[in-house]
Amino acid sequence: MKKVWISCLFLLWLLAGMQLVRGKQYEEDKVITEVFAEVGEEEQSSIVEYYGVYKNDFLKLEERELFLYQIAEELGITDDLRITRKYGDTKDETRLVKETSQAATTLRFITVKKTTEMPAKQYMIVNIEMKSTPENAIGYRKKLDSILSPYSANSRSSANIIGSYPGKLTLEERNSIADKMLEQLGANIVSENRDMRLYTIYAYTPYFSEYELQDGQAVNINIAMYYSESNDETRVYAAIPIVGLDY
Picture 1 (cartoon, rainbow, N blue to C red):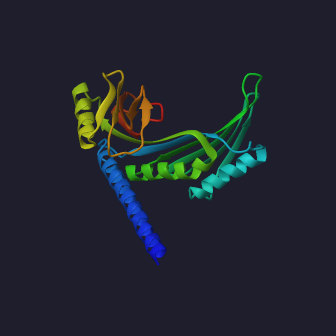
Picture 2: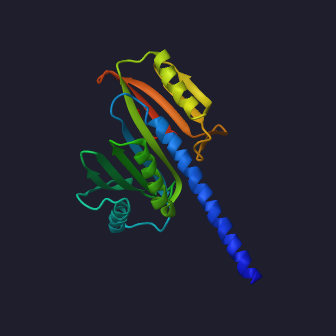
Picture 3: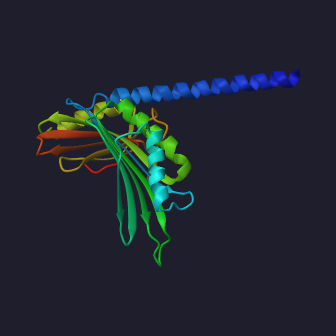
């Protein structure tokens, strides 16, 4: 009877712990999405990126395509898929693409061939571009991490929210936008470069549990801005943990 009581107590303790973790995760996501939702005055877009080294048994040509279809299905992408293949002397690439008016998803499986200096390696790269809320971007990043973690080593992923303001913002206006975001996130600046040529800030917020190390310091928020002459707008990139794309 005592063993049963101890088992029940342990189970209740475990369930309580799981609820606390879920509650903390919900609060983290809520704060991040609310702050990121204020980025820009125009319609937002977002880009989710994932990169990882494939760590399981080496996939043959026909297996690579099947693997990408499997990942697409787990992401909920099941129709109107386009497959392409490229073969080269140094690497092969299999690419699976799905495009709609609201999103474009690209899954790539790259094989770098063996040389006298280096063994062969295989990589997984996923890019999802969406017209959507920060909540969706953060959710897709988590989903990709969950789906691909059993296959991946040395992986990294990012959720990038892109907003814009009409015209060329002054340095003072850029600083005002960035400082407001950092204050709302309770973030401490780790490194920064604030000028009209290169504007980027790396910071750490306790509202987001993941982080990357830069020069031994934890970073999990990245803010960047640049002026697009062709569109006459200032673009603001807000990302967790860091901006994972060129801008």
